[in-house]
Image 1 (cartoon, rainbow, N blue to C red):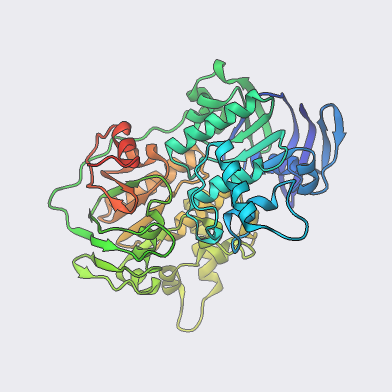
Image 2 (image 1 turned 45 degrees about the vertical axis):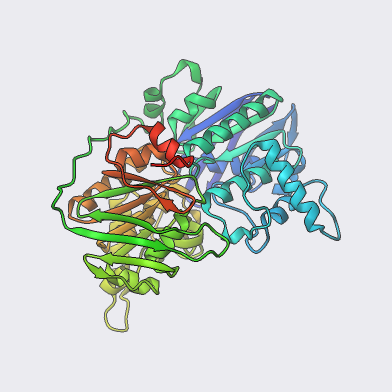
Length: 499
């Protein structure tokens, strides 16, 4: 169905794609693997009409095509779900979906018809859409991802490109997506699937292409290769292994106490008397389907949302979380859920983004002045310690791959060494080696007597990292469980089973 021949793409001094040649078949799910910056997303952006290649040819059904815009690619039947969301945030879910429909009205929009279209599209795809009249800006990350998938399917899509589509989906949501992809494959469509999760490749893909530094390393049938061999092709070495989790001392000091905290009903999921504690040296994992109060818990703890009831204590002192500054001053740091929306200023440089943290600025500032030499030295240390791949410190952070952007954020947010770190999907979009590096950084962080509240859609990540695990369902936080905990037990709690 689709053929690439000698595709090249350069950004400044970086050769993002080097003579890439690939053939894709109708009725297959084809996975693309590679480290952050390997060229996977760049290649898919060429196919989706976002980038024009510097050289090479694209053939669709045997005919050479040139996509001068994403609209041209859409008209050819190519839809893409981007790693970073492209919703028009002031519009509702239904309005975002109807914009992508070939049958969209030219002059006047019937909201009732748009809602019906959204409900029907979600039913066909088998995805839970929530309230189709919700404003897109208010949606939790997982629900935004589902809307993006439905947007890509809204037209006559023959080729569906998904860039890390399960990065913020729970295991159950991912399985629903895989069922949908298999159904699309049976209809003769081509699915191109970028992921860092080897288990997903083994579960759903027919063939896999591994890329490294802009080159194609190998294309193989998934049935003929092990997960370990795929990892070795990706990173050029055996995949790192996690070390067994050690127990936290029972008499370790209590760093965070959340006591019966509730939030007001404002269109989202209201927290209902949520309680938990974190001791020094402990990672408390929070699992749950997106939209069950994770965003509200995160915002309450970092001062973006006022609690309607209950009490939060840091090291035994009541937290005034009326502002993010007050929460940060009390010792709460965070890794936000959406790096483009909440963590980076994309036109600014790597060095400038590296210091966008209250604690970092306090350390570097000299009275009224912010010495440029100190800024660059600090940024260089973050880049080196967390293996951020960038040409220079002056490179716009928008030109970094998603994984390298995430490494920069993690390094910056850990640098001030807060008492408690609230980390939401901290390894979203990271390859195997980079994800392990973040996990090791969190282990080192808590080993120094600090605490982490880990909110993640990746159940494996929660179970691997956490000393205790709790589940959020409909705004209620379960009692924390001490591993070993079976994934089936967590799954039942995520589905609403009582403790």
